[in-house]
Image (tube, rainbow, N blue to C red; front, side, top):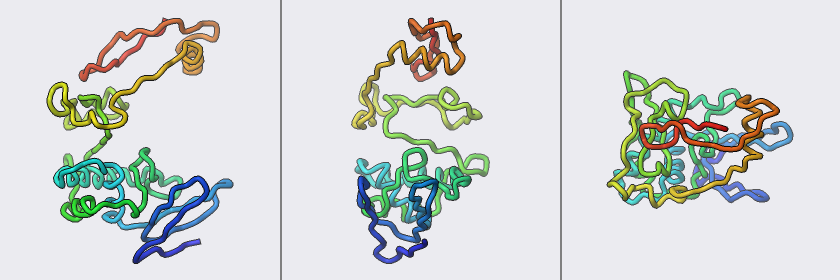
Length: 220
């Protein structure tokens, strides 16, 4: 089933799901017992929703513009993320957060319109413009995060003034977690880090990345 949602758009909601406004066309299909909805929409309208969802806490228009360019570049470079599933990008932070058009802000629309068509390039190709809400005060060298080819423009930098990073207001800036040795043992066995007869009894940091984060851990 394909529905047109032009003009004022089409509101969708369901049990346990938020009410969201969509524009463009909506394709409804069944996928292994689940309902799948694909929203076909032009990139600039899509970006207004992305910028509103990813950067709704920004205050200055220039910051919104920077986010718009980064998100547009990400969209162009990774538009085939889910091509095997029959669409381009998902609406979660796995790709970019997109909540439809119901929460689109005026500043986001202005930023997208002011930067229309602009992307970041490196050696004539769209650059890798990864972004996130919290960096802990300093970003990391990308090769310490993903097994990708090193990019000279993706180097660790300090976020704001020393001791007062801009991202300190982000909900995930400070966090803690617990890893029990039973769970660590299971993970280590499944990854063949230890034999089935061995147990993880301790963990220590034995290497640090350029940003000061732990890079290598030793099980014992």
